[in-house]
Length: 283
Ligand SMILES: C[S@@+](CC[C@H](N)C(=O)[O-])C[C@H]1O[C@@H](n2cnc3c(N)ncnc32)[C@H](O)[C@@H]1O
Image (cartoon, rainbow, N blue to C red; front, side, top):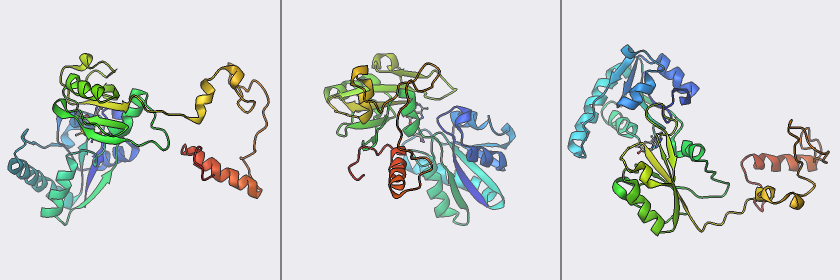
């Protein structure tokens, strides 16, 4: 039947998607490649349905290939008879072990169907945890920074696998970046930490990422006007009383319930606004 690659999200059990949870509950076997993913899966399935897989801690490609072939050979018969799941933290298609399994299954067990259930990735979860907004029009690059590396170039980067924060920090600051670190974000296992001081996280922990932004980036948001003094505010911006009601009446454009052509244009514009595209000149 089907092998599902299920993204578990960053670690907290209730950040598994509704679909992911349903697939885990229905699967005959839920295969887990590690301790952390196992502990999250255990929140949704009983231990007797967990299938542990062993992968050697090595960079030796030959050994890794044979471990993946063994894992695929164990999973394939169950995936032909019924539905099984393979869990990964975050999303199965983002820097994940699942890609190796999928390719091995495709090569040696082509009769097995494979489906992926996306998960909340650290790629997006970091933004909430670190209080970062990637605004419309902004670029964001993904890099790895294991062993003290300091990749540079893009205006904004998420750095994965930050295992030597002080060394990575030094290189980034010298290259003109401001950096914030996040450790064990949205994870039940271990202490969550957000800091811009690399000394606080000098102890190695694989579940550490960094967000680096060029210090000289100039970002001018239309809503920056809200941060100016009250005198600068235009009449179109209505302050709220403490109970949330408007402090004064304000004319609206009546986009809700639009009926005229002008209203429809306004509605289309409003749909763009939902995606943060209000400062584009194609309106
Ligand atoms: C091999 S990647 C796996 C990414 C995962 N598939 C995802 O979509 O989030 C592992 C790296 O992601 C980052 N990471 C993943 N989950 C994290 C979390 N909850 N908190 C902080 N960093 C995390 C760390 O940098 C870690 O070294």
